[in-house]
Structure formats: structure tokens, C-alpha cells
Amino acid sequence: MNFRIWLSALLILGVISPAWAQGDDEDVHTIFFDTIRTGDVRPTPVAVEDMKYIGTQYITAADSQIMGSLTGVVQFDLDFYADFELVRLDPFYLKTYEIKEMDLLGWQRLGAQYLVRLEAEFPAANLRSRWRLLDTKTKQEIGKGLFEGDRYSWRETAHRISNDIVKTLTGERGVFLTQIAYIRKIGKAKEIFIADYDGANERQLTKMGTINISPCFAPSGQDIYFISFRDGDAQLFKVDVNSGKVSKLTNFPGLVSAPAVSPDGNKIACILTKDGNSEIYVLDISGKVIKRLTNHPAIESAPTWSPDGRLIAFTSDRTGSPQIYTMDADGFNVKRLTYEGKYNDSPLWSARGDRVTFVSRTKSGRFDLASIDTSGEGFRILTQVGQNENPHFSPDGKQLIFASTRLGTDDIYTGDLSGRNQRRLTRSGSCSNPIWGPMR
Image 1 (tube, rainbow, N blue to C red):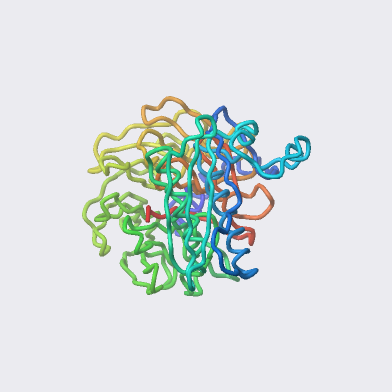
Image 2 (image 1 turned 90 degrees about the vertical axis):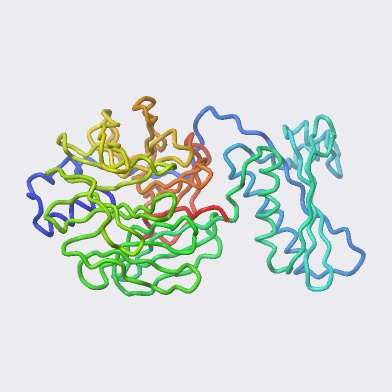
């Protein structure tokens, strides 16, 4: 729950005066653009050829479609990855040089440093997929692999191939088998939806017919913690990702909000108003209070754990406007992190631990994503269009998922940390509170 939503809830409860809440929101406006590509990052150019059938038996049109779709997913994955950029086949180049089939030299001339070649067979009801990774300059094969499984699981096979290519070229794990969760408004209710990282295979996870917000994956990926108004006041719940079974964890007086599960999965930092003011507490995973971390008359909100679980960043208006602070996980050693801008909220620690991303009201009056080094240096703005909120990192720390109004409706977008390669994942509108699940 971000600071403005939290503020509205406190106003309803009468915890603070309405006069305090009159900020400069009237100046906020929206600019509509689609994908933008910014920054000075130079990703590695990689090409992916269409998958070829190498068997000897007759294949159906559906099999051909599977090969085309699998190729498209691998191309999308590698172009999505922050370190790569997809080199596409240029029909003009083929026509100009009267080339019937591209070779490594042709791909090199188009700018590709590496080329992925895909091959398929269809033994029985299965799909057998082979991939080879070639250096277009040295002509050497630098990686290869094989997957076999149900032919209708071709999307998962494509993501596994993409993950292997990322591992071969970078040594790091790819995120192409991860899932995302977000909130979608249905009538007067808000429900949790879950989908693949690229927005495919979307399904509705909760069907509670009430307001549910602030989803938060457990590190195992098995459960999602969230806030629900099902029984009146906002309380902490969790839902099993596979079964959809919902459990209520807290029953405190006042509000519960902004849950954040610790990296070890054993604790949940959240906001409670049970003692009259909004303060940060740490609960165990059954919902029982372990410790109160803050004790200040200001509004404290939006706690987020550092990757090692030793620190917590949070929002506080203790200096008159919402700013980002950090403290030790036991509540001591509070430090202010942001000084630039009058409104900074919704902090999120990067998976690599070196930066904190947050929502900042920029000079234009717009809400943009921004980030800052954990030392307090290196403040930079990551977005430039629409209202952008609820940032959350991919598990490899290279991508952000966030909600934006840049095309007029509330939808979910992703982009890498340089602000490059921003993509729209949902198109239904009324989507918010996205979160990225753990590695699978």
C-alpha cells in the first residue's frame, strides 16, 4: 500500500487531520506514450533463427505452428533480457544481396554477435527441441542443449531454452520461468491474478468478492500474502498459489497494511494501527507480533527488506513530507536516504542490494519511478511518461515491474533498470500492485 492510499485509509479512520493531506496532487497530469527506450546501455546483439524440422515423418500444420510460436517466445525472452538485444532478419538485406538462406556471415553483417539455431522433432506425442548457440565471428559453437516433453508444453520448453542461453552467455539464471501477481478490479471487488513473467497464462487466484491489495510472494513461491477487507477492517491473509486456498492470519484492531516477507521467509514486516498510530511491526508467518520497530508520531509505511534481511527501508513523513528511510532490522539506527524531491514513497530494495527504487513526484508533477544508491548518492529517474507506481524487482534484480497509466488505463509494465525496453503486460485496465515471484 503506497503512502497516498495509506493516507486515505488513515483519514477515514480519523487518525490524522484532513488538512495535512492537502498536498499538491492537483498538479499531477498524465502524458500518453507507448514503449520508450532510453539510457546508454549497450546490450549484446543476439539473433534467433526460425526453428527447423529435422525429422523424416509427416508433421501437421499444428506442429508447424508450435515451431513458429516457440521461436517467437525465445526471441521475445532474449530481447526482454536486460543484457541482450534481438537482431531481426531484414528482408531488404536478403533481397538486395539475393540471399535465400542466412549464414553466420550474414547475421554478423546484420550486427548479431551470437546466433541461436533451433531444431525440432515430434516423436510420438512429444516435442524434442534442440538449441545451438554460435559465435558469428569465430563460427564456433559455444553452447547446446536438448529438451523433450509434451508438445503442448512448448511455451515452457521455449523458456527453458532461453534460460539456458542466458546461463551460457552470462553465467546467471534467467527469469523466464518466473511468475508475476497483481491486482485487477472486477466490479467493486479487487482480486489477485497470477501469470507468467511475460503476461501469458493469466488466471484469477482469489475470488473473494471484496477489496484485496498488496500481494507479496513468499520466497518459496508457494504462498502469496496480501491485505483483504473481507471481514471489514484491513487484515493480513495468504493464498496458496496452486490450490487457491485462502487463510486469514491477523485480527488486530485498526488496519494492517503493506506486508513484506523477509528473505528467509520467516518474518513479515507490515504496518499496524492497533495502538493508534501507523507503526512498523514484524510478525511471524502465522501473524503474531514479534516486535514493534518504530515508535514515532509520524506516519510510517511501506517497509521493504534488504536482500540479506539485515536492513529495512520504509517511508515516513517525520520531516514534513514522505521520504525514504532505512533502519536495522531490529528498528535501530534510522537514517534518511532521500533528500531530492518533496514526495518519495514505496521503496523497494534491489535484489542485488546496491540500490533502492521508489516512486517520486518529479518536477513535472508526475509520479515516476526513481532509484538511489544505498549510500544516498546517485538519484535518478527511470520513467518519463504516465503515472508510474508500485515498483517491484525481478528476482535477478535486472528488471522492474510496475503499474502505469501511460496509455490511459491502469496496466502493468516491465522495464530494465536503465529505463530501457519498457513493455506492457496487461491490456484490460484496472490493474495495480504488481509483484514478481521468485526463481523457479
